Amino acid sequence: MSNIDRTRRNFIKASVLGATTLALPSIFPGKSNILAKTGQELTFRPYPHQWMPEMTWAFTTNEHADPFKSPINVTQDGIVVPRDVGDRKFAVNTRWFVEGFGFVELRADNGGEFYTAEGFSQRRQLNLNYELARSRVLQNRRVMSRYRKTGTEFSNEVKTLIALSDDYFQQAEKLLGQGEACAKNADKSLEYAMWASEKIELEHARQQILKQAREQFYFGCETRQYIWAKSEVFTERFEDLFNFATVTHYIWDTWYPVFEPREGEHRWGIKDEIVDWLMENDITIQGRPMFWFHPDVTPDWLAEKSYPELQDYVKRHVTAMVNHYGDKVKQWSVINEYHDWANIHDHTPEQITEITRLACDTVKDVDPEVTRIINNCCPWAGYAAWGGSADGQTDRQLRSPRKYLEDITEAEVDFDVIGLQMYFPRRDLAEIVRHVERFEKFGKPIYISEIGASSGATEESVQTGDLGISQEPYEWHRRWDEELQADWLEQLYTVLYARPSIKALNWYDFADFRTFIHNGGLIKVNGRRKKSYYRLQNLIDQWGHSDKG
Image (tube, rainbow, N blue to C red):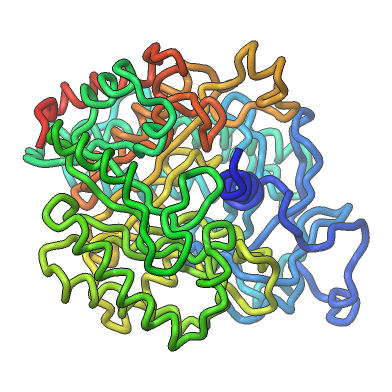
């Protein structure tokens, strides 16, 4: 595995997927000095399922779902939020096992009203199980009401799940203050509410799809494996499925042939081969990325540039990339993960905005017809809660992708498309849709630029130690296998394709060969198509996008 893929995978485990490999806030029994000084805190008391691992972390988010560093702590009493959290509204987030559904990240947001420090004096301790259930139950009600106004009709299955969830929730309400008795009813309410959430999204999406006619939509994949796995089987499988593809141009990496070993010395070789292959098969091409200021792909000669020197390089590099391909590549991921995650130069938000502006404006100056994409990883921005970026820890408050896009939009940076990475985020389909809605508010087309989920452990991966059997509860519905990977792909693609703002869905790992997500390909190393491949093929046929172009 390359350095960059190892780093990215570790980060996804730590921030996007909710594991604890990043440096997290100190976790210990008892109370912090801050709590002792204020004497006032709000405690979310958990009553976890017996299969759930020990809770070791939690974080706060604002009303936009942006994480922020706070003195929140996990103690023997539960999740403790001191009065020092400030005057802002906040929600509490943690990973929680819902029996019958999965071990997912959930948010308690006071039923959509959010918590405030002013409320601490009224209720000092809350039942976390109840708060999680309440937040999801009330969200379901709001979403169903909104969708019904568009003409969506829900099945008896959804109505039954909602009724069961509501009934258990009412029982939990009656038992508030009775600890475990309240929690047990809240757990059942949450289980039914989680299933209802996903079915609400799927039923609404399927009805919306029937109402719309989409003449063009991009179903794509990354092409980097072509370098090693070049074969007739590989290329035929790829050509048969996709009308869109991304071609990677990392400046430096141990995994790919080095693209720019010295400033201005570009090695186009294999990149040109891939571009020509895609053009021969009428597959629309997106180049990626022009700039990714991540420590694992940034050579010293680039990392050591001053701000003015970097500005000069940006102009030259953009001009070289766009001019080299001309009409062959009319879409470019201009800036990748620059939202305080990949920021090796430690630029300020203002400097980031100006570099983003310069890169986008230069692309337009060279070729006004090129589509300019701002690509973003880690859409839930867990790194901002822990204060860690790809380059290490920082004391300043880091921005989420949403906040970064808000800032560059307010600064009138001219770009065309928002790119969002969506590797399985240990969140349910409804939460994914809610988060996409937060990005839709910018009024730009959206590409889901990188998508991925594992098809689970195989006998070989267990024997080699590449992917063992997890000791944690199942993440989503059950243990990952080929069928579940196909289910996740089909359901995710359905709820996203139904949204007019989404213009592209781009899977990342095509084959199980040097993958980013373990066993995350659509085909095996030997070329055998997985169930996910067939499921995607069926969706493309069903939605009328079988023809290229």
